Length: 440
Image 1 (cartoon, rainbow, N blue to C red):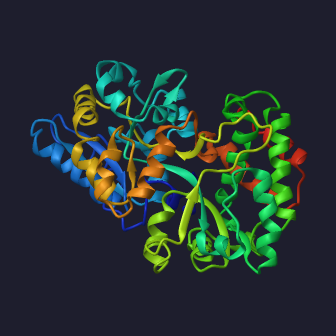
Image 2 (cartoon, one colour; image 1 turned 90 degrees about the horizontal axis):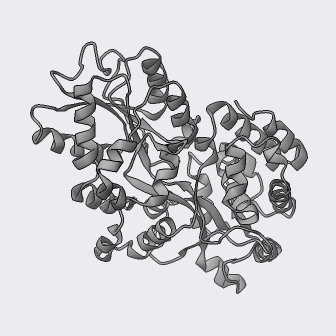
Image 3 (spheres, one colour; image 1 turned 180 degrees about the vertical axis):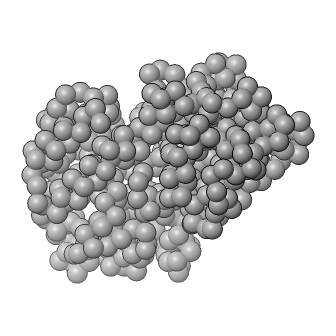
């Protein structure tokens, strides 16, 4: 992820706050502020409630590990991205490195900057079994595990306004044809069929992620991710690109969607205020709609469902896309003593009963098998159960493309998606432009 808006859709950064650490030298494995003795260093991202949960986990670990403590530093999302690049280039990375997995992690692996954690998980098979199996894909490079999955899962969900559907006498779409048929129904009723914060671009990307899966199955994007020549020009890709332009031309999205931003929550407001009937967005927006939408959520007007199937497509409607987990890697440049502290933290400090409970109380679904047993006491139990089932039962959980791809390819992707939704390029031109990024 490369834009400030991307911070909103990852559990690693919720609401940005002032960084606790201001200088690079004070946060690496050497220099002022480094961990004392045989300790380790760890960077986290700011924003509550996530920052508090992370800090509590480290403090609890330190209380029981006096001889191998973790020195913690926190940064805002964008500041972190700049600092970690500088730190890694100067061999001053923290022992424990926040990462989104995917293409960024793969770059770390190629430059030998992060430790292979496969032996750790071989030794701690019980810990691996405790985590969603789907969380390990974005942590794996060439069959080896290089990051610790943790924290919460954030799939992309189809939201809808129940009152508006009742108003027109419709049901949530289960197929693409049903969704297209609803477009004129809502437009004739004076309601935008779909809310979209198109200025943010990654919100548009969610539509393609699901269409690629539903049409070509997870194999379609996997082949692109693995560098298949002209992978973006495959028939399934062109079909998906064409379908999304069909939706734009039909008036499926709210007028002026290209000027609406997701970071202002304007797209969510259209849904809960009754001006749009549907919205495809991350599971993380549930909490903000509950906070900002009056009684929209608590009054039972918010509905949610899986993304529709495409007739004749190869994808499974149970497949999911989004953020499979949060991830921490371990610096290959750290001392052996610091690495041991990090592994101890991964083993018994990062995923605990206390952190699982804290994430649930914050309205999120931990990547922990059996976490749903704690949902019963929550007023959000139905929602949490839906997200848990969607993530834990997904035959394939595709990581967000702008995280899976290299930073260079991801930026090209967002630029061309903006043009695609703006109808200024054809599906074939989109594919040609993206094929040019192969190997970048």
